[in-house]
Length: 221
Picture 1 (cartoon, rainbow, N blue to C red):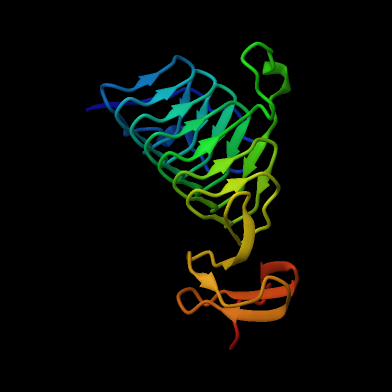
Picture 2 (cartoon, helix red, strand yellow):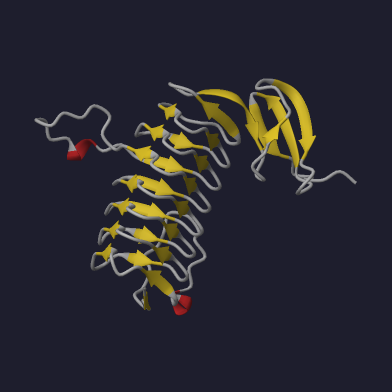
């Protein structure tokens, strides 16, 4: 295992990453990993066996990249993301803070690929927002936005935008419920009115028609 120390200036991210270039130390990179020149990696990140990070990639602080992960050039991975084994994060994918990518889940960046047709100019952007979970072996069809703290079940296929906190399963995926930021299912209907207080965090969730959000009040007295 080798420990490297990077001091290059981090380019601005499209959202706040809390990266302090003066603290970019203690980055762990396994001897089998390949990190191309120019790649930007934040302090405390861990890069495990057989990972390949392309030179244009931007990786935040405290990120874990498991065995055999690939990270493309036009990729942003924010602080504290965890990407499990055998995941390829292709160009035009952005992961906000705290995203979890389960083993062997799949991103795409071309909607209608053909080997004989060049479509690199047709890449579609995929945005996974803060705290979302992408379960093992799920597939994210390019061009979608997955909302904050959404939870994509194992093996699901996502082909449209996902609401914050939505629990999605199936092929193609459909919403079957809501998930808390703590990672447990919320006992509220998909549509209607209601509220729920998380017993672990005290966060107060409010359902209004088909939208779930944390109340500004956040807690009951």
